[in-house]
Image 1 (cartoon, rainbow, N blue to C red):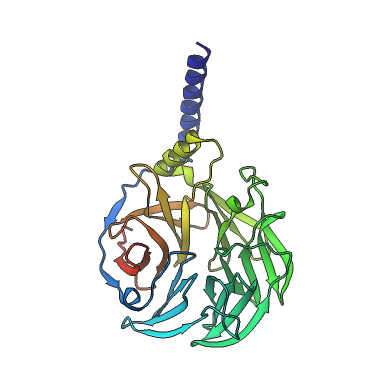
Image 2: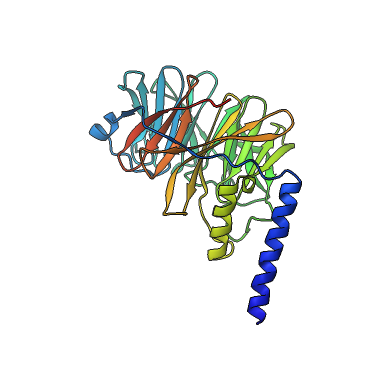
Length: 333
C-alpha cells in the first residue's frame, strides 16, 4: 500500500510540474522530427584509411573538410573528395603525436591538435608542423576534450577541479568558467565533460549527459542557459534514463557545432533502440532560445561527429561505414 501511494504521489508531482512548466512557457512547441536523406557520401577514407571512431572530429569550410582519428591522425580533404594533407601521425618525432585527440581551426587557418599522449597542443598549417605547446601538468583532460582558440588563448573542457572549462595561454592556466552544477558528481569527473563551442560573440558549454546548454562571455560571465527537457522528446529520454538507475551515465549529446547563430546538437536516444543520428537545432535570439528543428539522419544509426557548412549542408561522420555523409538542410523559416 505504501508503494502504491508513493507511485501515485510521484505521478501527481510530475503532473503538477508539467502544468507549471506549461503555464510558465518553459516547454517548447513539439516539433516533428524531419527525416533527411543522404545527398552524397565521401568514401575515399574507407579505401585507404580505417577510421576507428575514437575521438572523431570534423570541420568544414568553403573548400576543405578536416577529419581526425585517434589512431590515424588528421586528414584534409578538398572539395573534389581528394586527400590533400595528412599529418599528426603516431610517433615521438617533431609533429608526431602519441594519441590524436580533438582539434580546432583558428581564424588564420592553423589547425591545433590535442596530443593526449604528450599532453600538448600541436600546431599545423597546410600539412606542415609549426610548433608544440606543452600543457600544464595540473590540467586534467580526456582525449575527447574539445577546445577552441581565440586571441592566443585556449578554452578547453577539463576534468575535475572547480571549473569544467579552463582557459590556457602560453602553456599556463589563466582562468576558468562553468563551475560544477548540482547535477555533477565530483566522484565521477569524466561524466561531467562538456562540449565547448565558440560562437560569434560568446561561447557555449553543453553537457554530454545533462540537459543543460549554457552561454558564457569570453570573460567568464554566464549569459544565458537552456534546459533541453523543454523539448518534449528530450524530456522523455532523460526521464527514461534516470528511471533505470538514478544518476546513471548516458552520452545524450555526442557532438555540437555552431553555424550562423545556431547550435546543432548531435543527440542520442535509447528509445526504440540506441541511435546517435538525431540533430537538434537551437537558435539563440537576443532575448531567448528557440528550438527550430529536429532532424533524423537516415544514412546510419550511429554518427560520431557533425559540422555544418555555410552553404547549408550538414556533414556527419558515419561510424559503421567510415564515410562522411552529406545532408542538405531545410529552412522552415
